[in-house]
Image (cartoon, rainbow, N blue to C red):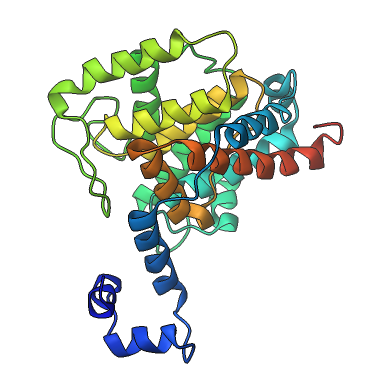
Length: 294
């Protein structure tokens, strides 16, 4: 690739690229993200060996805690903090503009934030209600088509007219050149995914959870809300197997999308590592309330 071609791919002038290359200027954060994305497209992620991936799985397993789900259900301060953390980050990833503090007052004080849309308020309050039900074991599974559709219906109630129904239209993910499941094939592929999950071995690992999430997001069964539904399902799956929930940070949104797409196209190693790191971060939050946590 010539410098002129590289500059065009990054959306800058040849002179600006030259200044970067010779150390006379530093790219702005937005340009740095573009550079990282292009690097990943062309070079890929550093290879993760089978031995390293096995160690990542073991690191995640060491975070397991017996009875964690029941403990979160009983420990109100811990539950509330996880509720805000998960709701704020998951809705922000999808474009909600509330700050974490605003998310908190909307959830607990039923406040109306000036200059914010009704849709944003509903997205936050619906998410918090559904997540609370998961934490309190009112939605223990098993994972079925009906369960997933109900999850979507409750999450998108008042937001979309097709809440709880698979999309009948072709979908696309902005910024990603990746083929999603055709609407006619959604039901069949969802049933295959669910059968695969329910037929897994007795020992379910972080790789199984990562694989389900990557496949679900590639099917993209709903017109909107797929990311939020997928992350709620991942939280449920983590709790079912004793893992701390992998709460994806909005600050790592770009990286999340990149490793997820990489898992869908090439290899799951970077995505599994990413989820393990997010589990570790959530575990630090849990340890504030449960000092004896791993």
